Length: 262
Image 1 (cartoon, rainbow, N blue to C red):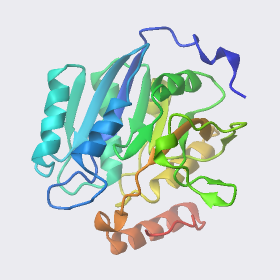
Image 2 (cartoon, helix red, strand yellow):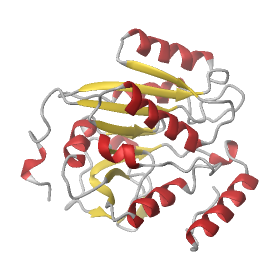
Image 3 (cartoon, one colour):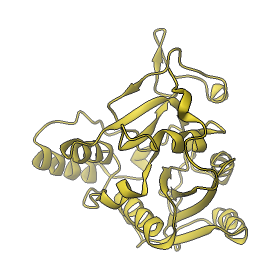
Image 4 (tube, one colour):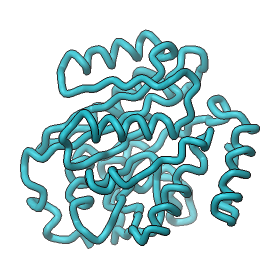
């Protein structure tokens, strides 16, 4: 069950760098899940009620749609926001690597969080995640996806239950969810994202393997339910890229990660 010391452990006014990779928000590719409306919903929940937050938006300026730029411009005008540009047609790993580097070089945040903009989190998740990260028993803490959760013979929990759904009892498993995760600054300084993977598919396994090899615990926690939109990745990443990444992963780690192109 939830430890009693989860609240009040992290000093108030600690600083969090939240990295938002604008991957897939491209004017030349239409993905029905990646819209200004869903972006607004996602961002409205990335709030802290206790700490200062830096928001780091990573994107390809020449490809970001005008209506999305308008939303981001409003955020920048409010302060505590950094905009990071990556080269056109960069892989997802570049978005992560540049975002983390900026968090470390341009902010004094004690915690680094990655929140993909097709992910809906519970309203108090950011503060709770930081409390969990601050405990010394884990290295990286990630959320648990309700959309793909299997319960009672059924797959998925409706999105409207994101704030009310509670696991009874919640558990933590040795796994990694790429959509909402965080770590301390010290751990972020150690993490090297493999930017040679062209797709997002193999990055969760790669991060988990790198951490596990170093004896660092990485978990997916049901204390942090999330709901990910069912993005059609085939519109964003080619099968040939997936196959090349699969070959790279097999050569690097020598086991089949059992990942499907979908």
